[in-house]
Length: 136
Image (tube, rainbow, N blue to C red; front, side, top):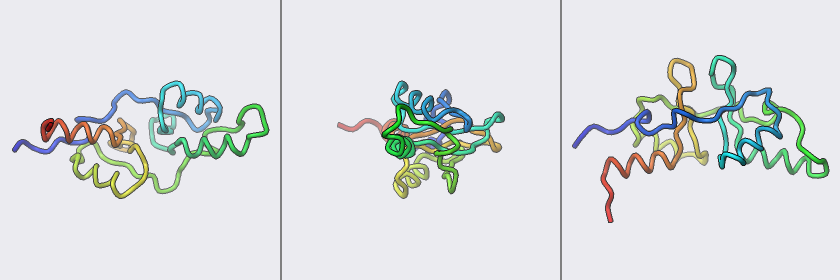
């Protein structure tokens, strides 16, 4: 059997990021236009500072339900505590186990302290399907 594929084989190298100072309205617009369920929030050095998910966006929209548009910045709503990350050399089985144990849909991929990609549950499924072969 060949060696197990790793996260870097299937992660998204070209992904949308947000900055903490972006407006929440712009961030929501970006997520909707790109069909994303969340995005990695980075600083100017491409270091991870948070995650903004649909959940945080829904909380903001419901709080501002009586106003015309949501106000505030991404920093006001992004998740910053206990953000799970993964390295590019992690095998896809270990990555799958992280997803199984948690409810999130994406993991930022960190190499030398910088965000170099992200991997989703769907990417892991695709990787496993390719590794084990398509079975009918």
